[in-house]
Structures are given as C-alpha cells and as structure tokens.
Image 1: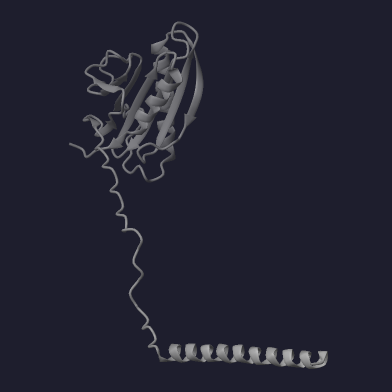
Image 2: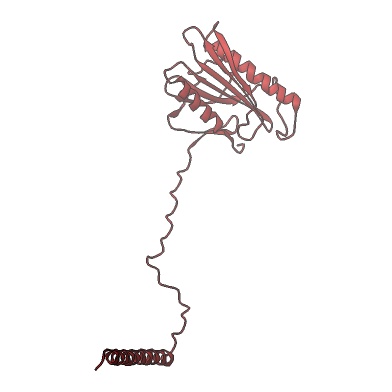
Length: 239
C-alpha cells in the first residue's frame, strides 16, 4: 500500500470515530432534556426560611429607685437628700440672726457645707401673685435681696474680711423666676469660703436658699455639691 493510501485510510478512521463520539454526546443531551421536562416542577413555598437562632427578648430596664426628699413646711418646698447630705435639727451650723429663718430646713455635708431653705422678708420682696407674669419691679427686688443677703452673710461669716463677687445671675431654679448671687471670702481665717444666695418668686411667697462652703482642700467639690442640692429644690402642695 502506498503512503497516500495509508493516509486516506487513517483519515477515514478518525472521521468515523469523531462521528461516533458526537452521536453519543447528542443522545446523552437529548435524554437529559427529556428527563428534566418530565420531572414535576417544585412548588414555590411561602413559608419563611427557618431562623438560624431564636429571637432575643429585650432586657427590661433596671428599676429606678425613688428619690428621697426633705420637705420644708414653711416654704412648701422640698430638697433631694443627695448622697453625703444629712438633715440637722437646728440652725447652729449657720451664722444667721436668731429667729430670722424660724423653722427653716437645714442640710449639712461634712462639717463645713450647709444649705438652708426659708422665706424672704415680704417687706423687702413683695410676694408675686403670678410668677409667670412679667413683673420688672418685683424681679429687681428679687435680685437686690439676693445680693444683699449674700453680702450680709459673708460679713457674718468672716467679719471685716474682703469679699469677691463671683456671679449675679438669673438662672432659673424649679421653673421659677430666680436670682442668684455668689461671693467668695478673701483673707482671714475663712479665706476661700463660698457664700451663695438664691431668691425665687413662687406664688404668694418668695423663697430664699442660702448655701455656704467653708474652706477645705476640696472647696470646689463642696461648692458643686451645694449647687446641685439647691438646684434639686421643687415646690410641694401647700399644707
């Protein structure tokens, strides 16, 4: 057999083999298609996919303990009994004239920080029928009484000592018209002591809140503690 004849024979065998493979592949694909067409389609499911973990219940908020308060019957107010404070039974811890704030409530922190709640002299600050109504004359009297009492108490605390005026402001306390004056003693044995007076216009009466922080290594913290106590004041129903 010549070389050309051998080549032709081999080419024919290759073509036959390729044709057989192609036929087998087509048959397989046809059978697969018929099997898929004959199988029923899966019905869609409306059920949600199962969760991988159970739903977590929200934790209940911790209960807030009720706030203990100290009432003042004379002014129909109360103060929060904040940590570190205690009620004292007399005014001996405050340098005020005897009888000036009869029946006033006094709280003390440590040995040198005191807050007293009482009533202003109605002759100096006329009571206000409606604290929400503007009253420029009464508000000026309110401010003048706060300044006067702060200066007078600083003099009683440290007679003859110089005092520095730290503030005279109108920051509201207990949602009432308020005037606050703060003084600092300079020089002498009570150098650095802080005196604060707030006067507040309530219906039919004027409230006075006096605070003093005597010199101490933590005088600033004592002053902040007195400020927080004064700002806790709120009105109570009249007896």
